[in-house]
Image 1 (spheres, rainbow, N blue to C red):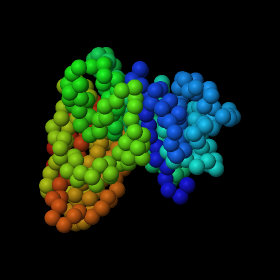
Image 2 (cartoon, rainbow, N blue to C red):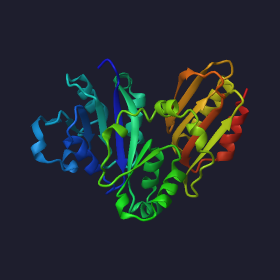
Image 3 (spheres, one colour):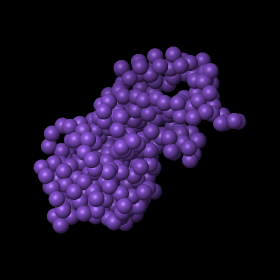
Image 4 (cartoon, rainbow, N blue to C red):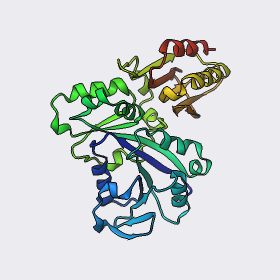
Length: 318
């Protein structure tokens, strides 16, 4: 327990393949100990033969996995799990019945004990390739689940013809998420677990220009994304005051926020990421020699006033 345990939140619209993915995680042979938290144990449909021992809340699986049934408060469940003597490599939470993954994510950002022991690794959304276009027309929840995601599993790709068109729609809602194409939720777990995708750090180490690839993406519906960029250094105090103002006025409609900020007089890149009104910032690493210092900030939200937010951002320059 000396290192923080990564937490993956799995969401997705009805029928997208969450149950299939969880069954794969629980039944595949691997050398990892995964703790899986779901709304109701019965909803997963796990083969009863996998359960080798159980008490009221915790099930030990034959491959070392644990499954907790959330019957009380999520924090109490996690607290009990963390205080147990079990070796845990990853905590996986499936949000069955919760249309909005934000409350789960916020738990790992707000609660001091949970935060000291765990790290939100990724919000993973499964997408039903065959039905997603219809679902997006009818469901606000389907849009928001995509908007919250760090990783998108575009599932059932064998059932559609215009896959590129679907991916274009997904990127118009969320230009930041990494997309994997799957059939029957089949994927190498190492590609989606322990990726540090939520904090953006690993992505930026691999591709320092990642954010700059995604300028001016819009969705012509209520959920949209846009990016802001400047090569002028930001004034730390002005930026903090502006961000606080944005959170107070538009926080509940800000689904995800990610970016890198270059502060005047600071030699380190400052990484920002958040869910709704909760924003975290941390110095990531020194700017590299010859590296262009650019501040980039991406907003994914619901009916956000881009012109007002953009104006304040540029006024926070040094």
